[in-house]
Image 1 (cartoon, chains in turn yellow, purple):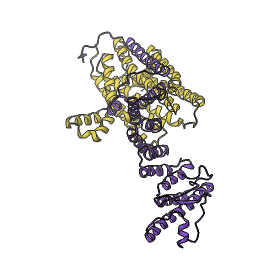
Image 2: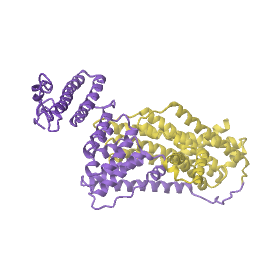
Image 3: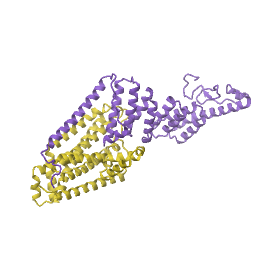
Image 4: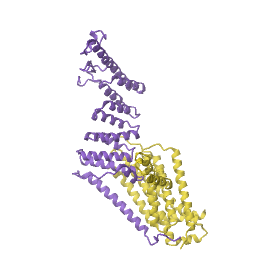
Length: 269
Length: 293
């Protein structure tokens, strides 16, 4: 446990020093600064557009960090052979995976919190300065909750990236596999909706079977997407939130345990 | 386990991420310049960008569906602004499709419905706008404007007062409805001779009204409509007895069907139209405007 914590701390420090981390953060802040100007191109309730852009930025930042940092930092350990230094110490490989994950998740968490804070500040600024006949209602609490679930989604993606990194030494391959899981995980729910709808009558049973299989195997990331509900101030039933939370947590834990299992079997060159 | 795919070679992840970020920044820049361009220059015969199918758009937008919806609304706003309202048929149909797509991507976003309901019917896209508004009516039940637009479109563009009145009545049941709307709807009912419907509607409204001022307004209109309904029915009875419609309400007094012509609460005078329906010189308005309609 202590070893994992120490490793997490080192990973976190290492992550903050990465140029990719800085690049992503600068990009996020620039996008948020521009959100007011971009929203101004729309009509009517431009605060809605500002909120959409803000939450999309939070989402994009968390995901980019999960994609790049997850695959990069583990590949770097293997590439620079620094992993031998760690594993030569009395640290189990399971501790290594969980420590790495802990550090990276903290990094994504801190960044998400920072970007969320900046998103709230910019939204508040545009809310106060926009000239609208009827000031729209902004559900600040729900915006924060949506950001929290974005973090949850990114943590799951992070676990996916560690899972793939546990058996491939190529950061690029792990990145592409993670990206594939993300793309499938984002669309399975939608595809299932289409199949259940009128479009489903035209779909062949094989395609339906594949879609159903994908739906049950891949993580259903749409469960963690509260962005639209937050922007439109829709009701968020606590039961659904708890279900989504447990689902993400269980899936993440399963991936980390699987990653540990594979990593233990892995031969280090 | 050896790397089965031999992908272990040196790979510069930092370089790749920087490249990806640059591509992203570049794309945003292009988009902004494109937006600013169409904002400042009037479009002359510019080809409209093809719109994807709803299913394709929904899946490819991933978790950024609202953002794509915002984008289409922006495109429509820019096109409308660029054309300064001089829309051709192609542009109108394109806008209807883009707004339909925007509404499908983010069904709780009000702007696509408002823009579609307010602007496009005037350019001929009536049949395209109705399904968009009906979609909005399903998702935004508390918004009185969507059934109001639908009611107006049916009433004015489709010449279908019955469906129009149905949607207008639906609009008046919304909690956010402005106080003038129920009276307007009752007037629409009564102008087509549906007095019984209008009376029933107003009675319901009278019972549910909270504001004493509004209650007073409804009561007055209700009184007028009850008289008009009664006069219209008596005119039919007159026709059954004498084989022709009465020319004026005083004819009913002459034959003893009523003792005197009741006064219009709005200060006007009731009269029979050629088809035997009743109207008043006040047009059920508080102040007299142009007299006879």
